[in-house]
Length: 216
Image (cartoon, rainbow, N blue to C red; front, side):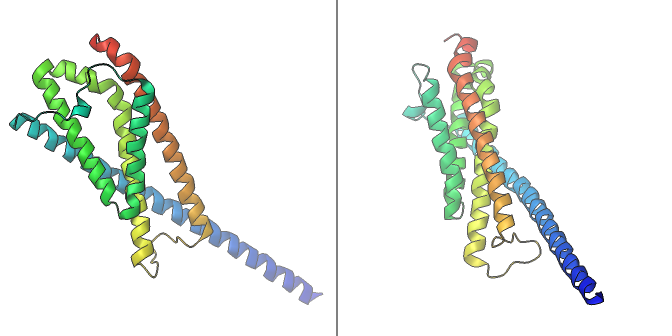
């Protein structure tokens, strides 16, 4: 009878230890992801700001003609804007699969073009018109691109870890654990949904509200 109770106690203790271990692992993964998401957002934002500043300085210092795709003669449709921006966001995310090189290139290129275009608008139409043209939809579009770039940075880290790390330290993401993968994927999906919502709102504002504000 005593042996039976001891066996039950051991099973209960083992179950408790497993649950505690799983909970501890989940908390560790969540802590890891929160910290690295913040880092990735900072990196993405920094690249966007640098690219914008470089583009604006180039436009201020030189008479650089705008690329044809930035010279818009009539307001584009919401569907075109949304599809175009979604393709850019997709490229930012998937660029992480090649160690983030494509993500960084797309961030720099697009932010540089925005800076160049913004400076050209200031020169030709004034700062108020430039702000009206980019501000309303940029409130939604720029954070979406920043988040997409951050996803690319996260995927680049994951890819780099998979290729070059043979062991995981206390601060590393335990990728081989099922719980870790679920948490990472769940947060990834949430961020992608947020990006698409922001891009849809931005496309609506740019297609319908911006022309009203600037009198097009």
